[in-house]
Amino acid sequence: MERETPLEFTRRAVLTGMVLGAALTPCNVYSGLKIGWSFNMSIAAGLLAVGAWRLAGRGLGTAPFDLRENNINQTAASASASIVSGGLVAPIPALTLLTGQTFEWPVLAFWVFSVSILGVVVAAGLRRQMIEHENLAFPAGLATAETLRRIHGAGREQAGRLRALLAAAGVSAAAKLAVDLAAAVPRLALPGGFAGGVTFRNLGLAFDPSLLMIGFGALIGPRAGLSLLLGAVAAWGVLAPWVLDRGWARPGAADAVWFSDLVGWLLWPGVTLTVVSALTSFALSVLRLRRRLAGTGGLGGRIGRGYVLALGSVTALICVAGWALFGLPVWVSVLAVGLSYVLAVIAARVSGETGVTPVGALGKVTQLTYGAVTPGDVAANLMTANVTGGAAGQCADMMHDLKTGHIVGATPRLQLYAQAFGVLTGSLAGAAVYLVLVPDPGAMLMTPEWPAPAVATWKAVAEVLSAGLGAIPEGTAPAMAVAAVLGLILGAADRLLPEPVARFLPSAPAAGVAFVIPAWNSFSLCLGAVIAALAAYLRPEWTARYGTALAAGLVAGESLIGVALAFRGMAG
Image (cartoon, rainbow, N blue to C red; front, side):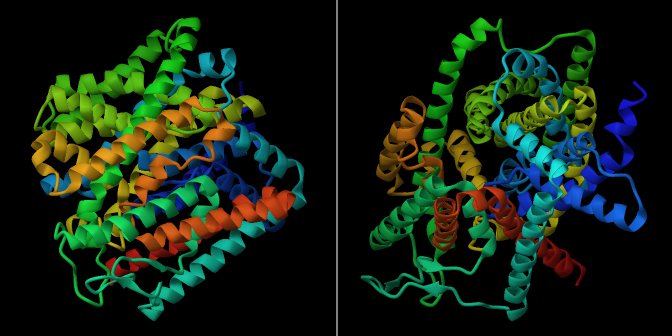
């Protein structure tokens, strides 16, 4: 017992994870508000930690960073970076837009921590069943374990990947800094337009020099990238001129981009497509899991006295926070925790089999539930769903990390401690970054600078459930009906068809996101995905070794400089 501490849960391992988590969390907050997606930071944290401690070893003579120490580091860092599932890029800003309620930093950090730590507690009871007995894949955990083994066993390969990550980050940061200092770098708008004086530039049909978007496109893959392109053409190239022609949206200034003028209409079919496809896919996943759940004796949680005490303590914490911050009755919060527990278990199973955590779909399940239980209560609708999303996101992240630990021979209890430290770090850092990036959500969000597609989705669902169909703009009903049918078909096909066939169909969630972000973002994301796919075809070994590191560097460089510039603006 005394040997495990210096070899695994060391002070430097925990502090390294917390420092890297604090540094990487802004990347996901930034990206979440830009395009609604986040990036698993486990591999990046492992690379950076090994590089930093090898430099320290050369300069200061410190001991080498052990493989299991690095596992503790990546556990804490990934928990911190995945804090965005705690509501910072979706329900929390949506609540501000609908009610005007804002939060001070300590209060926001406390709430995010409360809902996220629930996921860690849920994961603690699932590990033995899902990882030891059922041996679910948890693909991100497998990939992280393989990467950690490589970088601790092959110094040259590790050094090359780290150099690629840092070089890409440097280029991306420099480009972002140059654009900011230049004050305005023109986007390359496509020539031409539509009848009535509507130009392609007005609709955002242009190319934007964002290396972050290209890097993110390389990470999401060609299916999502091409689906974004398809969605952008349908939304901004087809529907937008049609809406303007019928007078359902008013044009802006002749030389401006009309994103804010049009997105209020376009988000409704986009949200419908995203929500219906996600719920359909989720429902079919649950049906598929029923036999496995029956065969394993239930949800797979381990119930013991200590576990019940931990779950009860977290439930009490959420009840206090919900009552103090949002006026939620205790029974509402208790029901939310119970629902979140069940949905987080399902999310862990889905993530374990597919690598995809359906946080958005789970939030919508809770929103629909509370739309019936507490009709018209916007705070209850959004913040109970926030509990579900935060718990599901952290639970899935913890299970992937525990899979990594299982492979490399880590101590599960120590990983749970590291995850808790990471959640604390992410809550503090993520809340601070969110407040700095968007000090005025009402004026800044759902604009070309901060499209916040997840915010638009959660806000739209809450509006319909609280205000009824009267919240829907004129003319959107036919478009929403078509989007619902497409979402149902694509969501079902994604689960029922064989994977080699399904991957050639459009991704409905990606296409739906394209309705609520500027078209130039979709073009850049698609470009990055196509470049990565071509590189994988032409140079498969090189791309497998360096592709993820390069893409992660492009994302990290621009987002970190963007956050730094926001802090500078606040200080100025």
